[in-house]
Amino acid sequence: MNNMNNWPAATGPATYGFAVTPSDTANLERPARIYVGTSGNITVTLTNMDDGTSVTLPGIPVGFAPMVVKRVWATGTAATNLVGLA
Image (tube, rainbow, N blue to C red):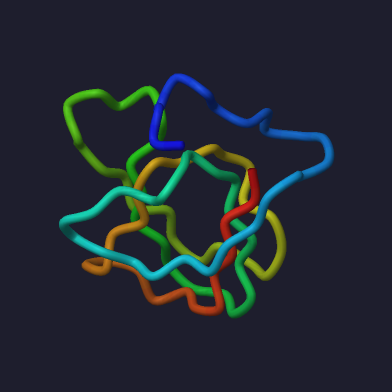
């Protein structure tokens, strides 16, 4: 499933999960909420950013980040142990 129009809700139960490897060239396998296992900055492209721009969110704590993203960038991301939940 690679259709970016099938966005998961920002809240509610997840039905699918996967490890997130930040990448400057590839989108996630599907849009997802992000669980942060080790806090730090995270650079993402949100699902509504059709032009591929990114935003860096400083100091995201451990837990769920309140967003649905299509890419987690390697450049600018220091948070680790990331999990995508959709």
